[in-house]
Amino acid sequence: MLELVGGRAEVEEGEQAEVGLRYRAPTPSDRDRFVAYLGHDAPRGGTAYLVAVAPETTATADDPRRRGLRAVGASLGDLDAGVLTTATGLANWHARHGFCPRCGSPTEPAHSGWIRVCPNDESEHYPRTDPAVIMSVIDNQDRLLLARGVGFAAQGMSVLAGFVEPGESLSSAVAREVHEEVGVTVSDVAYLGDQPWPFPSSLMIGFTARAVTTDLTLQKSEIEAARWFDRDEFTRAVADGSLRISSRISIARRLIEHWYGGEIDVADPPARS
Ligand SMILES: [Zn+2]
Image (cartoon, rainbow, N blue to C red; front, side, top):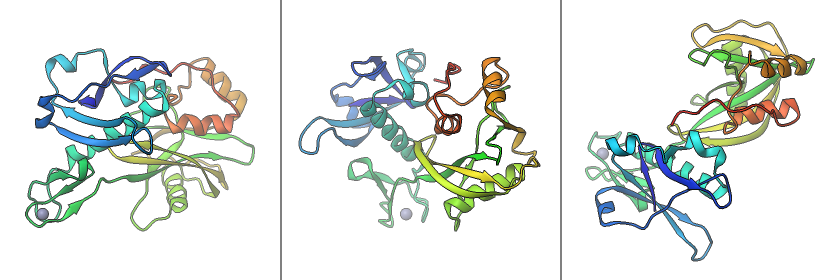
């Protein structure tokens, strides 16, 4: 049983990785909590993993042993990272879907925590995943486009990203977002990888795209700054601290490293919770 409080779980020194999740046996007080079954670690038998979502108290809020997925995701082993990601996504969904979208009645969890049911009209509601695209845009001189979104930390820059709209294909979403945010036309959109991002319910789908135009026209409401980097400029800016890139946990970092051609040796900024 993993206990999640305000999106944070207890962690301890890990056996396989830097840190591990601390699991506990179920307790009678779990009866009053939202509990979901997450799965077994072997196809037949094995250990069953569950999550219990406990209410936040003053004691747990200040407990330094409790950490969230953003803070420890990159330091966990594969199994623990998967457990915490699924638990976080499921807990976030339940926390935000307490009422039936059809009739407004309070809904109840069912199927081991994987659906919610409306007792009034018997409609079933499934956990949502909101697709978002994230893309490295590269021009004909092999330069990478990085941008600072409104609200980013000073010196922070990353690749562009945005939500997929209804009726849109993933490649159309890539082309539209890049054009809206920086005025660049792209072609050759190609899939590179993806990552669940349960804050609260996204799936980040990573692409690379070739820039057909390079003039930048920024969408002021979303983008504070944007520029093209060649590898030398990028290396210097990261080294002298004038450019801060996304943390190791994010797919943004992997897209940047895919362009760069290897791991970028720079420490992560301190993460929130
Ligand atoms: Zn209903």
